[in-house]
Length: 122
Image (cartoon, rainbow, N blue to C red; front, side, top):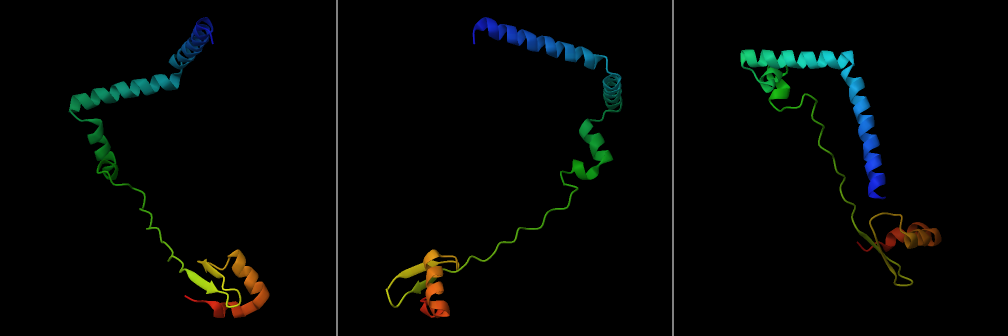
């Protein structure tokens, strides 16, 4: 992008932001908030309080750093599965698995049925 095109783009963005600022200045809700803030800061100065102290008076739990929401229970973890080793006595093949979803183990169970459970080494 050329420097001139970049300049024009930034100029348009600035004009849009200035227009938005002008509409916000005329917003009655914003005027009320600004008035409230200035009066509040005046009162704080008059009585010698800080915002933190006022929050502590109005909501003691928030001021002390404690959360008002209940603390979530500790996350429970499952016991890790044990490694099982199956040895096919016919072929000498060994399968190590932590679950029953091993491809070769499934094939053996399909071929030999419940006898595969007797091949469990450890």
